[in-house]
Image 1: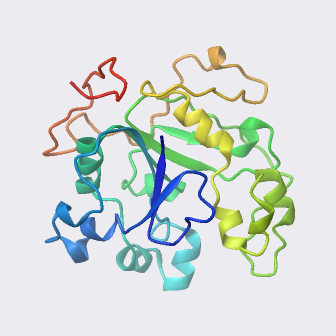
Image 2 (image 1 turned 60 degrees about the vertical axis):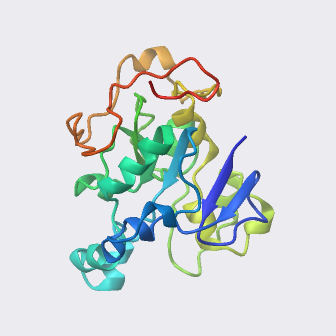
Image 3 (image 1 turned 45 degrees about the horizontal axis):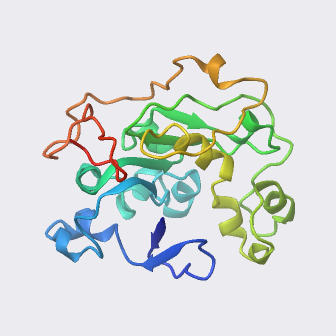
Length: 245
């Protein structure tokens, strides 16, 4: 079973169970005194949590909108260690996804980068991932045939077809642009030891050829998560829920 959580009402589009809730505000600087009891669920141990933290603090477009990169970081929620601690206390594994600049400034401890060219897709759309398990990069440099343009008048029809998003999204340009391609999801989760999912093939390379090619983008020491009860080298049990022991 899987379910999604978002502050926006995406229940009609989400393929599984959906809960509309805010998981970010209790961990931001504006709500430091908020208790985890304010969260919609607590104490539920999931096999893995996938988190696409809002990229507004890190996007190059935000720097233009807010006047500077520093202003964008100041005005938008950044990824805090308290959120990582909560993830580890409620999930056997987690995946944090964001744009490359989140890694560059040190907010994302990314160990893997992925782009569409690695899977033979016509777009690049590089994304970085911080995971609690090793994942090889799936990244190829090159010039994409299809650019992801953020201008309001750009047609997203070709991009929607390339990403395989529903036809009903055709009028929602930002949703089409920001949608994470299924190959990225399967590549990351296919390496998670808590679940079983097929690993998609990458262009001109097999999994074996990647060897131990785990990314090394600003990896933090094992104690970076502070006061959490779990550590980076916790072993997973063989039970159906993948509990940490």
